Image (cartoon, rainbow over all chains, first blue to last red; front, top):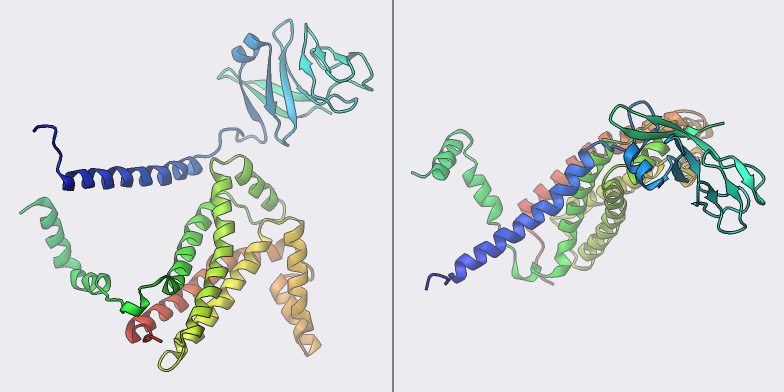
Length: 146
Length: 221
């Protein structure tokens, strides 16, 4: 029969495939490790937060800042993008994008899309982070604005 | 002649390794030694090989200065792809290295394998154990976090109690590279960890292996 395969040939195939699998699972992570991480640029701790279109399309994007703080990127009415700390300065809940403003789900604090406090129990606005749009259409987030 | 055999013949004409390789690859193992208790020496060596490979990879991103060390480790753990994996492998195999070495030592003791003519196998092995501990001690400082800093402070402090007092004082400064643990200690420990210890350990390992090849492993109980 044409479809018949010898025992030896089958074992050779099995060992070959297994070997290829082993080589793949060891070299793939190795190559990834050797590739310098893309999240930071040469100029310092700027983080690539994705493309401008992507953020403008959905209106917002959640990312982790360089120090591990959760940030929210929001596109304002004019398309201007701001990076704000997600943590409400009242009791630390995570704010979410509402109708043209950011709402805190816990005690109803409201913030404008540039982070300033509109109303509610929060003592101040949301912390702002530096934002830069680069030539490749990607938004980069830097350090906290003092 | 096929391409494979032509290449083989070409290499053989120039290096003549075939006989040597054949001898090394076709070593016979006595029947009493073909059991799991006799694996630990080889496993310890496997750990050493893994440590060298993962250590070289970590060196690509690690920065041995007091300002950058902690940040670079954080970078490896959070930003570099599979960096967490490589560092974890280095961490766990370091522990296994010591553990397997100790099990190997116990096995050699219980089977009486250290007896004549293998006394120096044992002695070189104990040197390797001390070197392994030195690997652990110097590597522990490198992440440059609180536990690393204070463990090294306490560990090097012991050297100060070596009499006479002036010698103890010399010793602790020699270890630390300064009066207290600082950036100079870090560079010193880094150099010892990645260059000095591997070279010294390699010499002892080669001696250890050549001796066991010459005498063969000890007889059955």
